[in-house]
Length: 273
Image (cartoon, rainbow, N blue to C red; front, side):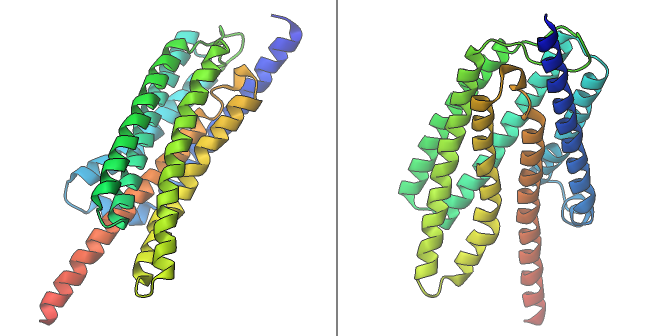
């Protein structure tokens, strides 16, 4: 390894550490910021599938990020780095899939549970995520790391991995674009038709707002894959996990809070009667 290569690896390692520490800090900050809402909406509620899903999305990524940071600063071996990032990828895949299921379901609801929309969404979702699953499995098998010349986990995978990851994120971009288009079309319909202001507000607050943030993340990964050197291939892995974790948990919390408010309004209405 020549001096320029070693210097480039050190720079890549430092940048990865900065981003990962920042991601962990953002996740902890968001946790503290929403703690009171989480206690009232999640912890004090009865056990349900939504509660279990929220707890998984909220706390498992945090534990995983802390473990990855420990591996980076403790000088993990290539095998340890591989195991850490494989676990990170599996959790990220689950969170990405969960957020897209939620947004697809909300889109279906906004379209009045139309059968044609249901068939189209189901088919497109299955095709997209089978492709994402296949490319993810191939990429995990191709993932390699440099021997520990310094502390940190720096990829030494072949350039073919870039093509695999490009297809992976391109599939996500295609799916997100399709869902966002359906939301915008429905929003425009609600905007032009009188008497649908409530539907328009729901789409704006709970649909487009969250999903715009989600749909911006995959294109960023595509740009990074195209523009950055191979050693930066895992640079956005932890930040991607962090942002998706935050958005997914907030989507679920919003859903739970709406259910609680709906139940309270029903109880109040019954009491008044």
